[in-house]
Image (cartoon, rainbow, N blue to C red; front, side, top):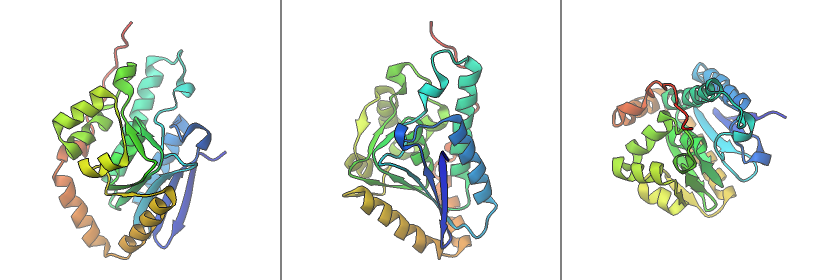
Length: 233
């Protein structure tokens, strides 16, 4: 089964994570597919806006821990972190504006993907969490950096260290969601409408605004290198 679906409509490319049986958890194959598709988008002037969504009522439940398993080597885990970091960097550095449609779970690296987009639109079902630290898992720097830029260092520390779960109203109030719609269908419809309008805007004007917005948080444009993770015994 194809793990990433791609559709194009009037200059808007929609990339849909397509592993509904696992709430679109990120496998190595899915991450590599995202890297490849985003590279294509970067070099396609006819693609004006990117929408990132998840199939089956969830956005993304984070990394697929079953794929790695308990016997995964440190090198395997490091390779996965590098892939997550590359996807986030590509999303952040695209010239085209990016919109995440968050329905259901956006956990760990899933929330990281949504935060990497220029704006996110959520539904009433959206739930956000960075549960890695309480579980003793590695939280990649590329994911941790973005909440600092969005909500500030104190609240970001509470989110990253506490592992709590947040709803769409908190997302709008704290700034990582642009809008919270009453249901999943409304969220997708709102994102499609906004993306189509944005696709008709002059490309140079959109690129200029993105450059200005990025200057406000320069530290998250190029994530710092990921060094060896020392597993606790």
